[in-house]
Image 1 (cartoon, rainbow, N blue to C red):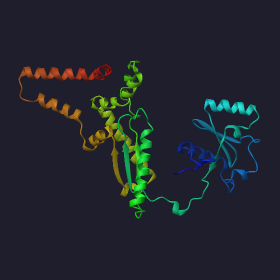
Image 2: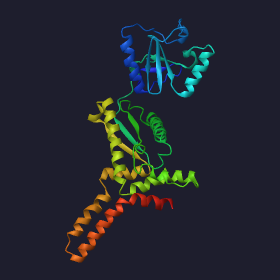
Image 3: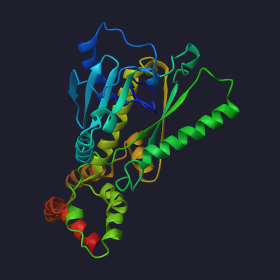
Length: 315
């Protein structure tokens, strides 16, 4: 895992966006100044209890205070954290000791050449199915389980192939779709609300995909997310684009969508192509008029299809 700034104690890296902002601010303010060679907090002779911050940086959900080049603290800006910080400071505690989390620039252990992981030669995109709206973090957890299982199999059966590495990447495509704009949720009756919400967040995905109104949005959404992740991975691993391999593992509805994307299957497009062919066939004037009326009816039906579909589902 890559990181520049780490939290004291757990040594977990900060989110990349926040870490980059802190790094830019730190270099602009303290470039050229010498930092201590140790990360041992007990060896720090001077505490920040009696020292005011010499510089601050506002982040999206927190802020950072610098007391010196190597005394940096992160504070949450959540309402509960602000209240707790105010109370403890009135009791005589310092801001840093009451609610601050000390940050370190660099990891506690120096990296060695043998710690370098093997080059990634194969990536596997893991695509979820229905029900992702109920638990958006599930695809990440499931992908992590697949990654751990693959590592165990790799160590057990392919320990000699140390120059190859397979990476599993979760593909979460559902949350970025607008679809009906939560119209179904707004007209769902309160009776047996829990069961209805569960159905709206799972089975409705199938109805969306079989609808000519939303099918294209779903396929384009998954395609866009796959391309985004692949581009991002190649930006961070430039050598992969030339000789890397890509696979897709899908579950449930994700299998159907992935198959349709790979094969180019689009039943809605095929139906639209068949209607003009029928109009051009050798039919009577009366039959032509009937086909034209049918086509106009289909267009009017499509306009109201979403509302009709939702009402039929709720009933």
